[in-house]
Amino acid sequence: MKSAVLYEYGKDLSVEQVSIGEPGIGEVLVKMKASGVCHSDYHVIKGDYPHIPLPNILGHEGAGIVEQVGKGVDNINEGDHVILTWKPGCGRCEMCQQGWISVCDNFMPSIQVDPVSEISGKNLNKMVGLGTFAEFSIVPQSSIVKIEKDIPFPQAALIGCGVTTGVCAVTNSANVRPGTSVAVFGCGGVGLNVIQGARIASATTIIAVDILDNKLELARNFGATHTVNASQVDPVDEIIKITDGEGAHYAFEAIGLIPGPFEQSVMCTRKRGITVWLGAAPFETNVSLDARALFTERTIKGAYYGSSRPHIDFHRMIDLYKNNLLKIDELISNECSIDDINHAFNLLKEGQVARSVIVYD
Ligand SMILES: [Zn+2]
Ligand SMILES: [Zn+2]
Image (tube, rainbow, N blue to C red; front, top):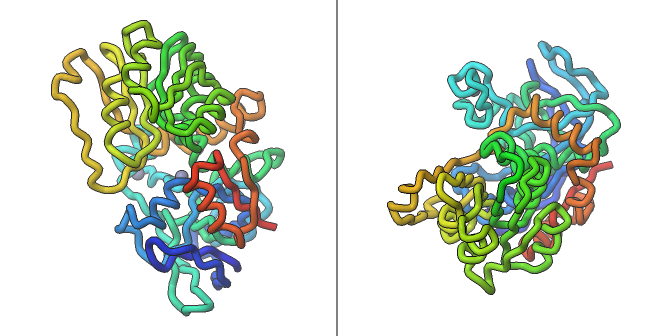
């Protein structure tokens, strides 16, 4: 199968032939049909997460068709359409038992069959056990969420990470109430989904913050009622002004690059305001806050994968999409083949696209 492999941080992905075995006990072979190109993949390429072992088939936002099921797999059949989840949850740990699958103690699903590069002969790791930048992947059955056959694969793939991370940060982590104000820092693939999540939750003032005007324009299409270009004005002052001097009820950090927006996302909220940090920052990104920032009973929360429960929330996202409440078609600004994957990362780096999607035959 063809796949895109990272051999060295900071280098292009190598698109090459790889061999893959048969699914083992409890495993499923999925023929990939589409994979989103997410900022977290780019973090790995840059070397921001040095704990991720190389060489590695990247990609974690995928949808496809079940090609073969291993022994002991139930309720999943050849030909099923599926979205892959990179945080399936073990079902047994304290967090899973409480319904917080996204912070399950047992992060990496076990994989019995490692793909092998036909060029270097090396065993290849797969990003978060999925490796969706490949024509096939063998995953544990717990990573499979079966879906209806009438949803297109590129749209389904985006539900596997960016859409769910953004929308569920609003509905599951912050629990945004109707008629409130929401500030969103960062209008990339995740930030746009926070914005539309806030619209779906009936927030009435939705303030998008970015430094690129094309992203802010896009934010308006997804439901932002106000836009703030943080390269021109102080976003905290501006958000307080827009909310009649009170500050926002909720704020979301969806950038994850530098400390500034993390701090601003706290300081722009009103008394008892709730801030959710979902940006996946590089290790040792230290944020400093005035200790008095929380005296007015503000809350800062983290959200990982939007505090989502894939088997519940993926279906909710599909229903919202089918009812024209969730825009996914509009998120896809570029569809390309795996041969063009490095170009897709260049577009992401330049902030040219909401999402690129790799489509497979
Ligand atoms: Zn992602
Ligand atoms: Zn667990």
